[in-house]
Length: 595
Image: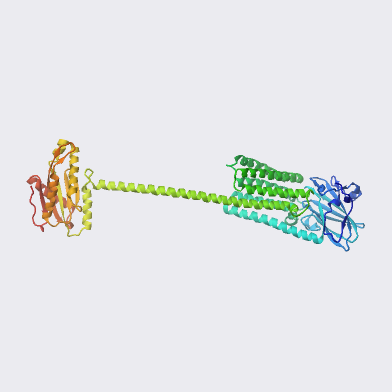
């Protein structure tokens, strides 16, 4: 709708503090950007009235745009006002204040050194001293490689200072938060060596650096002397484009969809090189094309990551919900700013700072998402460590059991070897080595004045059993003899088989020869008793027993055996089956053959 007041002047009164003069402005396109002020003043009739605020957004253009604004002062005294352009990313802004007697010229914008700005601020701003009752005409010339957005505000000096302080506080909070988030996650990367934290930190720092150029903070504070260099033109398009590529890499690393959604993971992997190619193009294309590439990449990144996040959410990827909300808030914030710049919604705190609020919320939520992912990874790591610990403990138990079983087997094998070394294989009695060990232990743990008796038993008529019934029957008979000896021999005494049909009994703690002789007689009776073989045949043998009775400490096993052997052969020479006892001279003679 055409507004009639567009042709009238802006009236400034004592009660006014902030005025939006857009609907009172007229604009003119200077094709080729070569016209001078005088030429433009002569073309005043060609200026086009502004019907609504969004009409002052002209997009990308190589032309210069002129604004014409008449101001009528109804002030009672001189007062300083500030004319401010709302869009910070303007290259060259010139203001001509035309009074009847003079014309004042001022310049600001990215291509003008900060030292030459009439008001050092993040947006192009110009001071206007309005006198009571005067009429002035303002001509504003704007050239920029970015989108041509020419919305302005007319503020009293006090109101401008108040708004500027509010803006400084908001920007300080915004960029301070970005620095804090980026630094914190970079420290987490140094501590944990997780690539996701590094990518997020790089994304935050790159986005913040580019945003400082777009918001006018960078040219004002970071690179004030680079206004006329080509590098300053590349900071915003290259910075935001690199940030979008880093955002794609961060999303692929953060969502980790290789298993749950491999197609989306492959899509991101193929898209990332294209994003880096687009970022590289912003360094070599002309500035306006670089800004257009940046805009396209920003839109594509937001849409792509939202779609990827929704797919991850459906696949139940951890923290995918926070990821989707974060990018949705950034989209909403950017959309609010764009719609507000188009004049479709009024200017307020949320619409003016929509991009800052959206990006701040997005990065804060992504940091929360990283924390959630970190906690999830920590839980998974702890779970894996616990599982590994349980496995190790189980393996340790199995190993202990196997070691115990192996040790038991080795002990059994050792005992078996010891038995084989000390026991007779046929009868289970002590063999010669077993008797030797027994005697050695006996001498070690027995008082020196103890007397022992060693009996050597030799069977008579055993060979005919082997010859007539076979060696199996002979072995069976020898085993029977060993059982009879075990039954009759006292518990503390030792029994052994010397080999063939010879047996040995070592009797401890003896002092009476008659008792020893009676002991041997019982043994002789047990050995001589008939025995029925397994084949049904009954056999019987006699035995000759030689006994050597001595003090234990003064003898060896060999001497005792030799002594008993001599006594046993004396019995054999005197006739079959008898007992002969050989004793020290301290003992009375008891050696009489028993028939």
